Image (cartoon, rainbow over all chains, first blue to last red; front, side):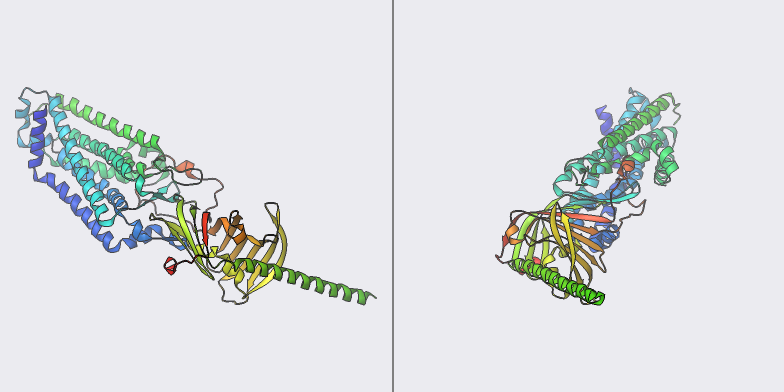
Length: 297
Length: 232
């Protein structure tokens, strides 16, 4: 199993498309950092709006490494599923396309093992991608912009809120958020592998995964009450942004943030469970279909 | 006979009004005298801001004052939201300003204590302040509360509690109540995680048009000099 995994990782590392993801993340993060270094004040003015009429706020302190990472992740974690699909969508269908799948399955290894190894390799790729993202978006931003307390701008129901998290209460939230993102992106990897089982070339499952993610994300963000109530809970994309829950700090009765607290841990835990259930279901279906599949290529 | 009685009543009223005016002028003069003892101070403490849309922690702060009208609040190295009208915490400026007409508005009670109400009206039409009502403890010569209406920034209130530094006329706690504008972010730009708490977020009875900053002072350093750099 370990040798198989090494082979799979070697194959992923030899594909040029693997590096597209790393290059894309680096490019997006650097663009963000340059733009905010040059004119982050405009963004802060937009977010703070008329709060500035009532309060004096040092906007230079507000644009810091922690804040930058949050803004970048907010944008990137919508796009990263596409990058994960680029690799995971190719897992089975790529072998079928090259005609190596039948050859591979002639070896004394079970189809379940083959599929699990493909999944594990995609999972490791996802983790490395997230580590790269953490380095670029968090550590590089901390280096460029420094650190300070962090502001979270949020729409909660009909209310808009500004939450402040003190600098010494942030890093653990990022660690938790990245771990959550790893689970969320693994759902995408599992979905891509499932679709990959049905296809004979890589393009189909990659495009299908991307289309499903985009369609579900749009539906998740329509913000129409009837959809929010009846459709949103059934879409896994609604839970992909659950990492933000780690930045929704709990408050006391006076509205003062409580250090080290979460506003709603139960909701994050439920979202996490739903995502893990999706991984199990997608992988389960993929194994069942793959085991019964008549491999012709 | 009737004419004489009316004239007498009118005359007596004039005397009473004059005497009352003198009393309130005397009280104001005594308050000013007490305030004049303070040339400068540096006060350390904490600031707790309560605004419906802001969830920010209480933070340590230092307030600097230099007579007659310099006042600034500096917080720790973290991010801080200092209410812009905080400069109005300097009630001394208002009281010391002789370009206001002082009107005796009778008496009231604050926490069971009888207080004198003084209304201050600016003589100059261009003054930012429209009207200020000051509640003065006539015994201790202390300002316990003030409500000021301005042209640009609405109405703000100050409530002062005194303790250790009562002899200097310096409060242990100031509650600054000010007007706030509603804060609304457009939906969809923040891609929020719906954690199911939105429904419970609606806080019944919360006045969204008012904000409050509570400044609690633990220590004052009085008349020891304050550097100019703190007011920049």
